Length: 348
Image (cartoon, rainbow, N blue to C red; front, side):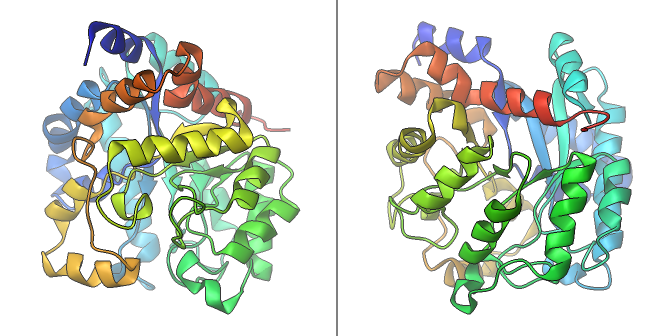
C-alpha cells in the first residue's frame, strides 16, 4: 500500500458493523476474556485502523432455546469485561456522544448488537432489558424461522414479521435501538420497510444483483433501506460476493453497486469476519455442513480474512479512482453519522 493510501486510511474513521469476535472471546474462561481480546484481537483491530467496532451477540444453536438468554447475558458481560480490562484501548458506547469521546481519546468505540435475538424469542419486552444493558442494534432472524420473523433461508415460505416481530420493531424504534435487516427473508425486509419510521441498517449484506444469494439484498431492498435514511454495510464473506473465487475486486463491485443505488452516503462496511472465529470455536466438519446451508463452499477473500486487512479496501477504492471524501464516508464516516443521529439518551 502506498503512503497516500496509508495516510488516508489512518486519517479516516473506520467502522466495522459486524465482527463475531465476541463468540471467540466468550468461549474462553471468564478470567481470560480481557487478556485474550487484548492479545488475539486488539492488535488486528489496530492494524486495520478500526475506530468503531460493532460486536454482535450471536448465540449458537447448541444454546437454543433454553440457554439462549443465559448465553446472551454472558456475552453482554464478556463485552463489559473486555472494555473494563482494556479501558485505555477500548470502551463500550451507548450514544453518539460516547463514540465521539472514545474517538477523541484514541480508543476503539465498541457497540453491542443482537444477531437474531434468540434470547428474546417472543418476550419482546426483553429488548428493553437488553437496551438497558447497552445493546444498541438488533436483528430478529438468522437463517431459519424465529418467533419474530423468517430468516433469509426461509424465503420460499414467504413469511414476513409475525405479530410479535412487528411489536419488536415498534419497541426498538421507541427505545432508539437501530433495527438490522441483515438475515431477514425477502418478505421480512419488505415488511420492515413498510413499517419503519426510523432509519434501519443492514449490518452485513451484499448485492443480490451481482450474486444471487438469499443473504444478499435486491436493488429494491437496497433503495428501501436508503429511503429510511439508513445504511447498507457490505459483507466481505466470499460466497456472498461471487459464485466462486471471490476477490477484493468483487467486494468493491458490490460497494459500487450499492452506492450507485443509494449514493455514497448510504454505504458502509460489514465485513463479517468469521474465519478465525470458526477456526477457534468449531470443528472442521462444521464448515462442510455450513457449506451445504450456504449453497457454496466456505471461502474467504485473500488478504481480507480478518480486520488487519481493512487497508486493502482503501487501496482498491483509490485504485478505482474514488474521491477521497467518498472513501472516508464509506470506510466509516456514514456509520459514525448514523450512530450520532440515532444513538441518543432520549431518541424522541
